[in-house]
Length: 264
Image 1 (cartoon, one colour):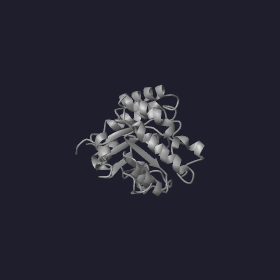
Image 2: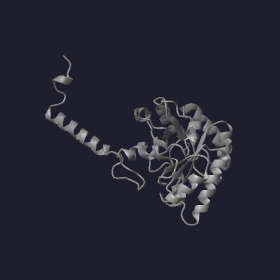
Image 3: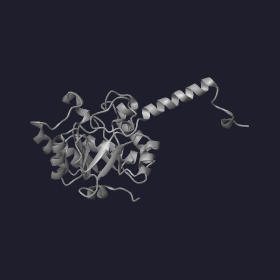
Image 4: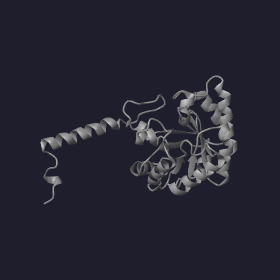
């Protein structure tokens, strides 16, 4: 399989759906890459998913680099995108360029992702101008959950025009792809048809140019937590729990280890 690149992803718009999943460690990234995923996002979702944080806000640049290094060492085909965490780019354009450069250089990722539309136009352009590919992210932006009042669908009523303006701003700034999170299906379709760059949906309907999910949601590793937009393909949480219980039982019974697991 040939290496996925920025031009390849841009050329897939309207031709072939783009597949994206999150990964935060070496074994999972290798499994995904071998399975043929197009794009791996090392998301700041690592905070609540892997590190026990209440949301994405506490995640640091160094934590993002640490997890992305593990992923990039495993990947041969997929394009790897690293999330810029909260307050790594909002302070100033110079700060954004400095942190984007550090994350890009030290992690091995091939693109950075940041949240925001019109307000981030100049920031996205500045990063693109130093030859770092950028993925935009509009709609429900998890770094803004306190302003939004929680994880709520965006782009309804008076917010439709704002979201369209955000999408146009991300495109004109030079981002090569954009994530649309938790927006009505029809709006996701409208933005996808309007833009020349690929859209990646997460809770944005089937008409986007591609889709992304958190791998732990897909595999049922987060217990009963399941947003409306998630399809759970496996229930590994239950499988792992049963395996651990079986292991505990065999130790208590004295059946593990047996002779076949012992040295002679």
